[in-house]
Image (cartoon, rainbow, N blue to C red; front, top):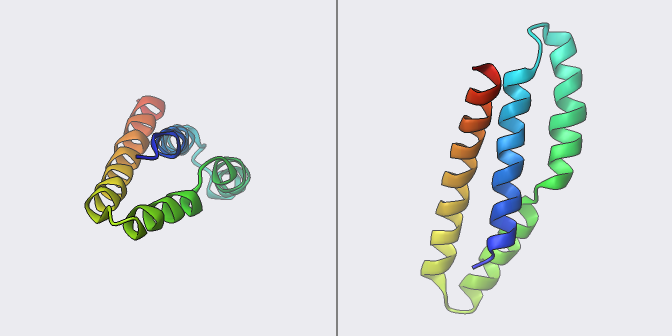
Length: 91
């Protein structure tokens, strides 16, 4: 199981949630910050391409159930981490 990629993606989702909860209310200012920090910085930190490639490699190795579990776990961890980050920042 590619635990490293899972950890990086979940921590990036947490940071994105923090950022979203922290952003100011002005749409123009928030958009610029989101593009710079959320898409630019956090987008380069997390890696959907690695998740996709690792899932494909697991499936090609005949480990389809593990591949499916990895995708589901990655999505669940990311959504939970983003929600926790947002709740903490928006508090």
